[in-house]
Length: 514
Image 1 (cartoon, rainbow, N blue to C red):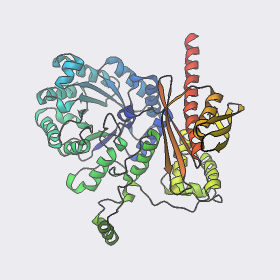
Image 2 (cartoon, one colour):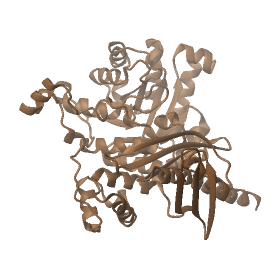
Image 3 (cartoon, rainbow, N blue to C red):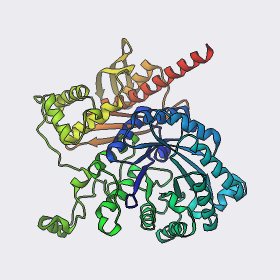
Image 4 (cartoon, helix red, strand yellow):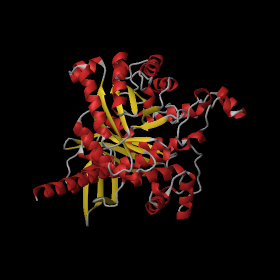
């Protein structure tokens, strides 16, 4: 155990806090399944006290995830801890993660208490959490700026109270690697009961040193690293877990530690998180960026031809980045599609074959040949849709000129099909006017993005929108070879989410009045 570094993923908690629109319960569960398949040891599923939606997400994930330990966050407040335990009790085993600020500036200006009070609150929180589970993690928020004497006192007291994981966060990304590693080393030297807990680290990237600080901590004895897929998170983000995993794998001979991560799942997990969170990955991002394994220099290319190890310290295949195959046409059957998905590493739990095959046939009619990356895009999009969508686009016709555009649609609204036509500044504007009229929703678009999925002029177009409705933001995605249709699907994705939210609110209101 002493040579294993536990991987604690907080994509669904700290990572989601940075998104422009909240994830749905279904989207969070998809990501949780991917994290479980990746081999993540602990999944921090959310902050249950923060909202009914977060409570439901944590509860749903705790119910379905079996291989990874599901964790929920709570402040050092009794009600927080009780609600966290309530959301997690459907799991066979779970972790409660409670925290309190420990730095001088936080204690003085945020908590406005004495340090003795803070220690008392931390101890009480750990003891309360131990009433529900024997797996309790305690975090010293802003530990990177906490005087070492105070930090040692807090850590010793939390361990005595029953915490078996102690997290040392560099909450504001302030420390340097040798400085942060030194903090961990001093804890091992000065805290008498340190051997009774696993020391964890949670580093932010405000100065671009989250991964370096985390690795310095590992070298100093920390045996849990907290972070997110693609480095998502507050402000400049968190430590990128895919980078930590590949550093430990690539430099195993030097570091002498290992993880339980299944490295060939990294690329797929990264892509899924990017897609569902609507957070593109920068091209030069380490490990998972589009340029991570590209070589442009003639000197580099010459070396690669002679021996790939001259300029590649790891292979694309090591993170699950496979060559994209072709040979899928309208004549390909379900078995062929399933075979390609199997080769890409997907299981039947990841997608619905009937839905995927139907979408595949529609695409082949328009595109002819379909690539593996098309299949993946179709799978992601299909997983975003619900079978019970109230609004569905049945027909679309567009006439566009240099000045104005006209769009006609047929929209399925429950059991009724409705028709509408509108004129707009462009085809997308005209289409949106049709949808607004038929659905009756007044929506404000905050963001509209179009990106190409795949290659060539027949590649799929993906539309991503952030829409504001009654003060809440929604993310919608649409995918089609026609970008106008993709734009319409993205808006309908949002409107169906709003419709479901309204239906749930009405049901709760009726129950409350009974």
